[in-house]
Figure (tube, chains in turn purple, green, orange, cyan):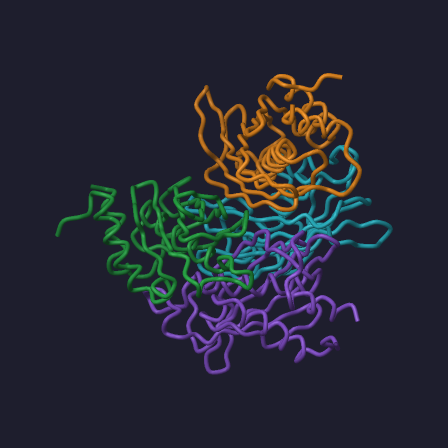
Length: 157
Length: 157
Length: 157
Length: 157
């Protein structure tokens, strides 16, 4: 088979895995861009993703951080990773039509990657930073996940 | 009106607020117990809350941590709080029928509370620790939320 | 040789390693108690360990957290660990004659331990919680450190 | 009096405060550059700042993060701040002649700033990233510290 070498191909593969995560599907998360060192995940801000003031729920922002940090880590050190932990800071209430998480790799070693992620709300094309996260992604000893290894292999080509 | 003074009354009030958070409703979160210093939140582990191995999605565990840490903080220093930040460690894959988050107050001052939360998976009555979180909840300057103040007032009675 | 099986023996071994850490020596850190699941580290609050208000410096509290979390992790999964990361919350200004950090193990697996640590100030026998920390300690691939393995072996006896 | 408007003036003021922190003096920390949105702190890696392998002690890296994150926050929202919390990831063992922490402002509001800090080891002019930190700095209600307000006022000129 041929490995993905463009952002479009990487995105297609990542979104196949996303599609097999029922919770990611439930929240409507989709990658829109992936390079070896950056990744962009989008979630349309539907009515059923909010807290009691009508803002995006902190759990939704956390879910986006979790997904973006983890796939960024898998791209750096994959295949077959686990998210060890992360921290998220909420910076301002998130409204708008869409949320976008942009992850990057701070450090990638043999066993672990440290990744960062900023989350923006998008309203009429204007972006505002609403949260930032920092996490640790580690290699798993479990057998590799179908599909997950492709992200990593793509970077070695 | 009368303020809640028992766990059952506090739970009823908290779950009213939860019911007005569309995302908390989407994931099926419900408080089952609240005291001035502890809170218990439950989520049945439905099929649509999982990642690609069939385990509970990290975003779901994060959402539970976010809700439990925040309401615990509101109970300690409310009304009217914001979650400033939290950190979560994932300890093992979460399976089973249900997840339960147990939060407690580490420190509660005039302006901020630091709260902790352990999340357990429940299978045939057996609990396993699957994640732990530590967060900072701060008072908001925004006008109080309908209902939220009740949690705090209940503790002052 | 014989392995330490009492807290006093574990403390003696841990403090030998501490003594070979020039920075731990500089700040005057000493373990006062170690069990397989808990550890207590003490630092007399000298004049040269403060910030500009005369309180204990945040860097000192952080150093205590770093040491206590790490040794607690080594006791759980050692020998030969690295501290991957930790988070610390500062709860109130720390004064008094002495600081004491009490660590415990939240989760210990084959590859990593998650440990927790509360730090107290001590004044005329009265303790106040001044900081809390949560960290991740991982096994290192590097050759074991002289002495470090003893903490772990002691727990296997 | 005149407020500092150049990096050199800001650095002089910040280092006066640093000089009044006995612990910062003990570790030898000095700011080398401060702008409204970035700050650089340096520590020569002396023999008495190490752990048992001869690497920089994690507590030293933490102390640098604590100082850099806090002063960066004071520059953004000062005068008169407290460090609420931070998280640090250790990325590789730190050796070399000197350590340098570079902080930046992610978000600065009325009441709190979120700041970030990368720490590098410097050996023969070559820098390596050894740690990264993310923290929350909040306004204090206590009376302002002599000198601290100057950093903030300088940014309002």
